[in-house]
Image 1 (spheres, rainbow over the protein chains, first blue to last red):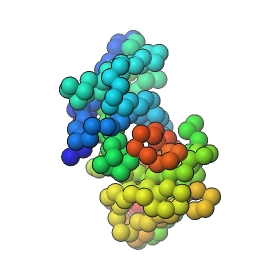
Image 2 (image 1 turned 180 degrees about the vertical axis):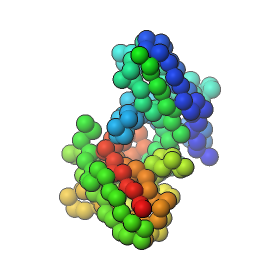
Image 3 (image 1 turned 30 degrees about the vertical axis):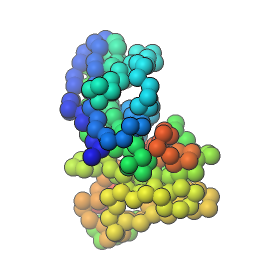
Length: 115
Length: 114
């Protein structure tokens, strides 16, 4: 069955610390897509990144980086030099054709960055 | 701003009532999805429409229904409301409604059933 696990319920760090949010997925498909979304306190869901199963290159966007490892079915997200504005709930999600295009979300990790 | 709009932002109603949530997708997007976010169930897919036709159904209750209109906006109707229906309801859109596409989410409608 398709599943996304975010084992870290809540993480607290002090500003400027680096933090890694873990995401482990299960799928029986060979072609699938992984996503990260951010949900700030205001409540909206903001798209951060999409990665397909054939592209295992790590990606960096400013202070954000993503490590995709097919061998361990993980798609981890690292924030470097965290800032208070990074405080939010972060969701990892999976999409594959067995789920008819819908997203399966993990339970989310709440990140609190203290000044 | 994702380009997806949802109205209303907040809705407070009583048990047994019926409400309608509205969503306008991003310009050019043909597919609309509805998701429910609750404390006990997390983020769950409800239903998907593509160009006016229902494409996929998730864990949507029979008391809930949706449709997508010719102008591509969508409405989610919730009837015989129960306390447990209190949640944040999101609409998302994508171009063709395919697996590889990014779904862009609206700001959500927060429903409180008293």
